[in-house]
Amino acid sequence: MRAYVLSLRLLLIVALPIAAGVPFIAQGLIVLLGGGEYLPHSAIALQILIWFCPSFVNSVTQYVLIAIDQQRFLTKAFVIGRDLHTSSPT
Image (tube, rainbow, N blue to C red; front, side, top):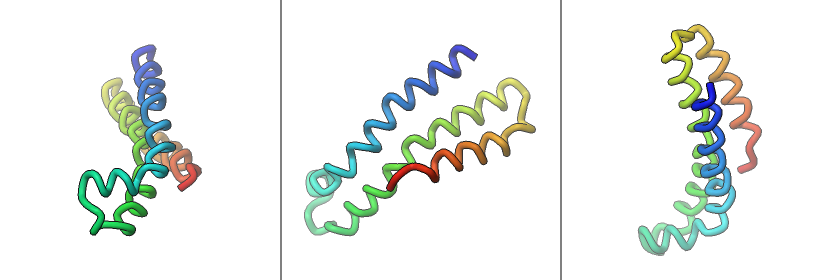
């Protein structure tokens, strides 16, 4: 349980600042990585898709539930993770 909580905290400490910061630098990242010809649509897509980064929390929860033979709670964990994820700003 301690390892699970620690991994969730670490993932959130990394994922939330990335998800919050990338929308502000999305155009620069696209120009640097792909070129200006991909603007503006790829920057918009990146600004939206980066908010899926914190969804790794749900994956960790699923792996833990499988590891402790509690698969019957996977659906509940997915719904909770989905509800938390859809309440994130885009």
